[in-house]
Image (cartoon, rainbow, N blue to C red; front, side, top):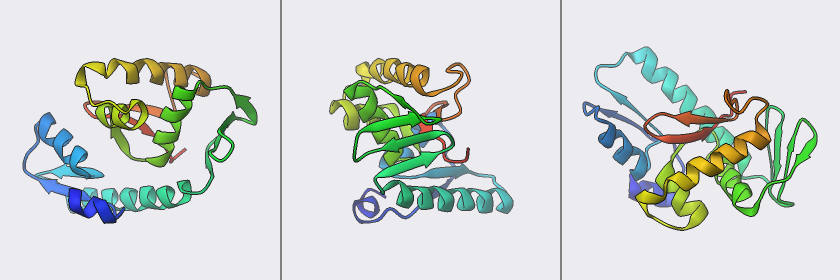
Length: 165
């Protein structure tokens, strides 16, 4: 998967018999977009394929300079963020975190990956930075930070910027 990810953004769904949390984290770290553990139904597999294709389409769209989802607009060329037409002021780190989530829109991003991409460190002991800054972002972007609609938590994985709003 790592080699495939080096040259392709094609969606990867892993079908596995391993269901331990660490196995799932390793698969996502290696480049998987999603996973299914046995047993699974064909209907669920097809639904996950449809989701992966939607995410892939959103990723292609998010490569443009302005990203839109719901009432959220991120203008990456100007480093501006708007919610319902009102500009939201973000610190440089808050903006970098949001821009990273925009780059991975629709996909779950693990905390360690965010640490590497935003803070440029790879220290598992520092994941609290991600949690703290995610709280800051939610307070500024979400109408109700306790019930986020844009910046959701993926239990056992990390965070996701939703695109299905």
